[in-house]
Image (cartoon, rainbow, N blue to C red):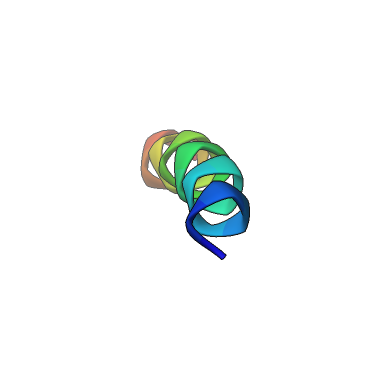
Length: 22
């Protein structure tokens, strides 16, 4: 479970940063 959360957690911040810039 930790492995899956780590992968998703890393992708979420990236998407959030892009949305903030938009």
